View 1 (spheres, rainbow, N blue to C red):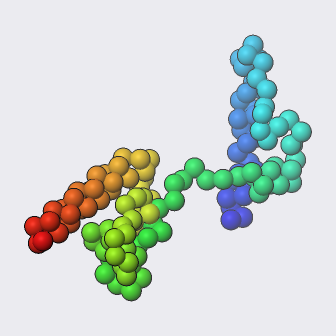
View 2 (tube, one colour; view 1 turned 90 degrees about the vertical axis):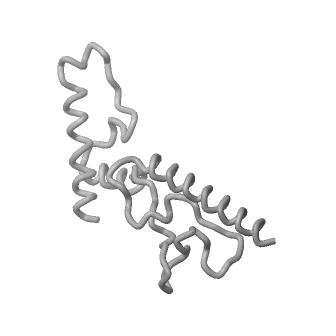
Length: 126
């Protein structure tokens, strides 16, 4: 965390330098956040601690597999609970290099196929 905090404090200064350069002055830019009153490293650190966040989307919170730590099986069914599945990005083992939207849509499509397959097999068994 100390390295991330150091980076987070150093990098707001760079856009400030760019925006205050002569070519931008005709647009009269004004800083909204963290605001012109936040100038010192300590003030920036405090701002980052209070308002900083991540642009990453949470993934990997529901392990898929057959071991004791797995939450869902290969058909996305929650282990130990009948009729419940997890069909979202939480089954991804790690975050992908790009946006999570397309892989999450794929997981949803595959999950829908699995639900339909299971429903068909139940109907045929009855």
